[in-house]
Image (tube, rainbow, N blue to C red):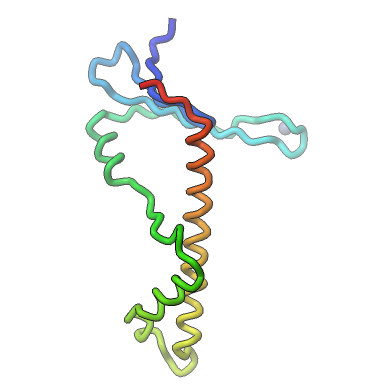
Length: 134
Ligand SMILES: [Zn+2]
């Protein structure tokens, strides 16, 4: 008989309580399986389980939200954000005129936005494939 009471699970994770655990700790198992390029089979890269005390879980939940502030920004939005940013003036030199500083900063923000979109897409996919039991 399983002693686990599943809260949710999906590809790569299982979040549960242990019935014998009177402190209501959360148990999080994270797996990473990769399809092997040489044999085509799925190999386990790692599988870790950690015990998270309920009060720590709640603080993490409320403070650990990822920054998605650039997700919906267009290239034009990014350019306008940088143009208004007074920090730009700080980086201007004879070798780095204002236009170049702005372009570098816009490129940097485009990279940040790409990362945010990638994580956002993974969240959407994981939400579809996750079963919730509460
Ligand atoms: Zn292999």
